[in-house]
Length: 113
Length: 114
Image 1 (cartoon, rainbow over the protein chains, first blue to last red):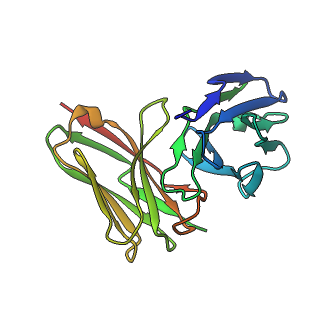
Image 2 (image 1 turned 90 degrees about the vertical axis):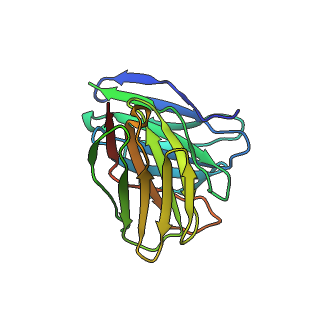
Image 3 (image 1 turned 45 degrees about the horizontal axis):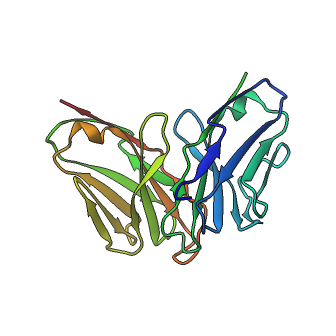
């Protein structure tokens, strides 16, 4: 498709519960990125993939966060044992290898209560 | 660590006026992006600047890049209400030819009043 598709749009979880977010990149794009946007507009890079391989995971809180991009499946970002501070909008983005244009999805709003 | 600073953080301007948003970054980069975000919405790509001296224009917006000064500007000409949004610059320090993580500025919330 011609857009980055993210699901769900909204997700509410109690503290300690698991949250899983999905992202279908634009067809033909081999790079996928996950970003977290917190309330003060700050964007934090989490992880990127080149096809199904982790490309850069320097932003991932590894204790509770994990991500995958498997062939023929949407990419996923999973948070085990959510905390209040995980409340944010999680954006997925994709690009071709040149990276000259990076397209963002609509985001998934995670609220941890 | 790459730092990206935007100013102003908030800008209220009247329709018809001109103004410039500034984006400074701390390390060498040849690739800089400008995005627009409406409340509760995704990031809309406005410009990608790929080299020193690059200038791009679309409608009332014009972006430029000075890699030596590590500065990009987003100039708004004759603002209209529809331009009200938050504008982000983002820097890719990896150089052209590869897709890499972006470091975002703090955003500039633009409010255009009638």
